[in-house]
Length: 422
Ligand SMILES: Nc1nc2c(ncn2[C@@H]2O[C@H](COP(=O)(O)OP(=O)(O)OP(=O)(O)O)[C@@H](O)[C@H]2O)c(=O)[nH]1
Image (cartoon, rainbow, N blue to C red; front, top):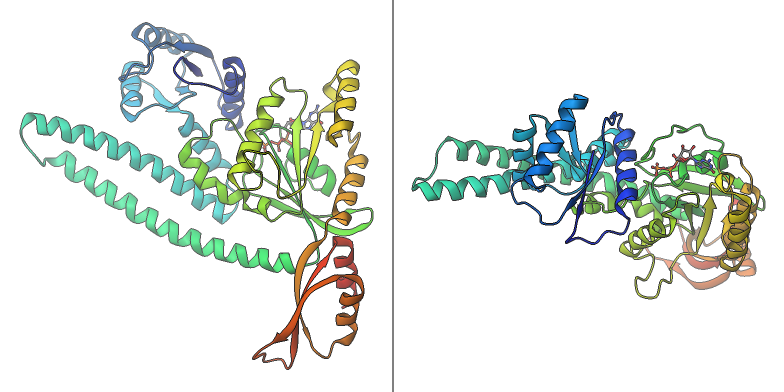
């Protein structure tokens, strides 16, 4: 596992933290790490990224440890990858390749799988295109055109393009179905709580604790690629939906940002976002920034002011790993910031989280539209008595007799009461 420390680049995490994260990612797909190194790169070498002395050292490590795979936690051009493979006589993958492997292994839903395949093809295509232009330039230099190489690469590119077009159509279809489901849920009288957080922060553990579900308890990064939704009950709120999301990681390669944005769309429909943070991790501040950047990307948080369109509750997790002194300091800070300190593993503090969620959910009113038979005087009167009716009109051309459409502001508790009327 090689972590290039490239002088010309700015990193959010320091190199030891980056290496630790990358090792975690590799472990998540069952790679056994024989040797790790941080390699300073003063000047990026176009052919091999690393300098020739460094490449030699890598070769020695590979021999010593009988390594089968070399992972470079950075971006390699197709040429660098090929040259390194030639010199080291081993498979070499870069960070995008590694994350694609993980995503590929973890994708659970149809949409997740389609997205992973699309991202994979996109990655392959860029490699083919680039090596093709490279070949073309060479051929031009020798003064002849065409040749067997070109036809093969052209054919590969055509095949990839066709497959990508088909995948996009399938994805569109899956998304339409998902939106339909979400609309249906949007009309359902249950508030949605979305768990977000940096990878390994403890979202799945907390999700299991709150829902009582044995979903995944392994010590794995990316235990969740696709949002998982479950109903939870909170004191005072009849029912709420808890959704777990994919863990955020630093430096997500751009091809993947687009591909995985959709898995986070659930977050934009949430009533409350719980941001789970691993307070025992020394990089928790940098990790928080990464999470807020992703939320800004989803237009949930304003990148300039830091204000959010959806209330965000910070959960300071892994309290059991902190010493008494740090815990006292955190308690004071949490009070000022409205954060909840807990341990998803021991369960300590989870009752405080439930109480805070109840408070937030019963406090926030939502705009909901109902279409009711005009003859249903009881429920229409109930909405006027309990909610804030914003609009009320007749639905034209209804097949089911005269209907009325009411747009009402109700808090989740009232929504639950209204549902219980029918
Ligand atoms: N000691 C301690 N360990 C915790 C706590 N919460 C989670 N963990 C551990 O942290 C690791 C990661 O937990 P997960 O729940 O899988 O983390 P996640 O945020 O869902 O991770 P991704 O799926 O990668 O996004 C596991 O080994 C958990 O057992 C906690 O409160 N205390």
